[in-house]
Length: 469
Ligand code: HEM
Image (cartoon, rainbow, N blue to C red):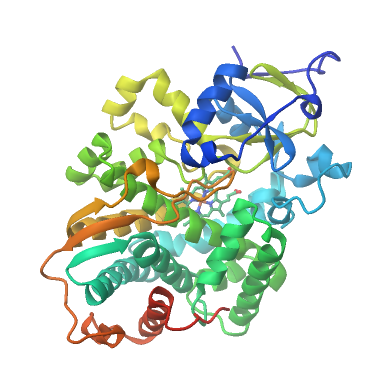
């Protein structure tokens, strides 16, 4: 049977806006989204109506239906102008998630406009994807070096044994350093910029102004690199499509920053967590040295893009147990689909190394993560996770896994902190004296990296505000 069938919705079939829906974002959802997906599936089947900050939408939960929505772009559109409730002015004023969707860039366009934007991205990202090209080689060694430097900073600050938050003291600064390097930022990206990306994605009360601030920062970066091109993604995007204005380029950088910075960072943290909480299959692949497989398994257990970007129905269509009407909004849930997938074939899924690639952590269909970006993301995650387990002889969670605090938001499943008790290997350099000035004992960075490390010291130890773009 097909996952969906077309036609005109029968007049007596339930209409999204008229259904009584339960709100998705609750304390239960923050703590245990899997329980919420299970309950919704038991009540409604593969597609469930839910409320998202006061707006009803269809949450697509089962693997087959999620794949259908991701793959069939003529039926499931990305352009927000297809959304009937928006076009008819029915959304609550200042609905917090709208600001991000109004930013017109590659992710939110369809057909040839979308394909052209993907070609531009592919051309611009390719040099960084290829480990044999100078840009690819340099980026790879920079990621490993930054990771080592951050561990050395930890040793300097807290000693060979102690307590650390692998979010604030390792993953977040690492991804800031990588983003600064890849985008060719003249000054460090500040933690405030990361917070603005969070505010936009999680739909906080400040989402609109936060989106505006982040966009303005990336437009300034585009203008800066136009005046002084370099060997960075910003300059390469400009080369790949010379017609891009600074505003357009700023919008593309902004969305790339979400994935490079926030999503990749969460993939690092989710992978570390799966290992630390004792997920047996994840641990087994790690101890077999299969880091790529470790990441696949962590993505299957806990994909950072838990619920993917909205799609809008082009025509009436039956999906799961409901008729979705033209212009309705749907959210395909990777996390829900993975739960379904694991339930269908738990024994062979968990045991086999090949089938874990069925995960939707990278999306699927025309808007899936571009191949060059995927390789880059995987390289960063495997390096970041690998370096932790190279340098730490012991790392244990200091909180029971079910008490770890998660961000509250509809799309991203991301930890706020990842607190561990650790012991470091003996080859990590130790500080010479007390206080933050001990840092020069860490491996001596050069040039650009030195500036970044100075900024990170301020960021991590509160010695002042990081300059923002
Ligand atoms: C482990 C890290 C990453 C994960 C888990 C990830 C995941 C995803 C997912 C799930 C989508 C599809 C979303 C949807 O269809 O709604 C996507 C799209 C995208 N990703 Fe990634 N991503 C990662 C790293 C990166 C990196 C490093 C970059 C750029 C440097 C990047 C750039 C993009 C772009 C531009 C799109 C939009 C593609 C389009 O709409 O055609 N991603 N990613």
